[in-house]
Image (tube, rainbow, N blue to C red; front, side, top):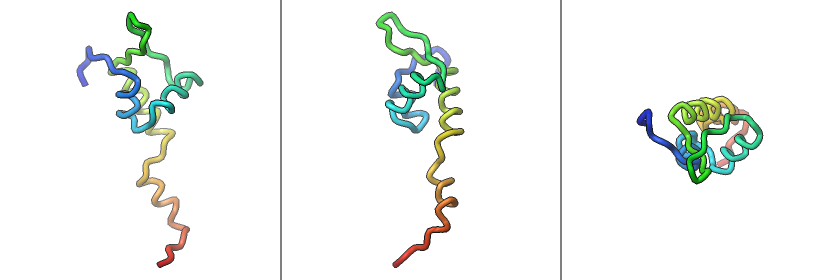
Length: 78
């Protein structure tokens, strides 16, 4: 990521491993800060914004690997 580059909502969501709808919900609910807007009033995320959202996503969205251990109590039938 370049320090002066601007990122759009879908790009940020992809980077965080979440859907665009989830990111929009987090923004609406105030769970992550709203970024600045460009002259067309579109969200313009900075690298700092992206990093904060990725960090938040890593705290609240369990990765598939971490879920694997939580599902160990389920018996596999073959």
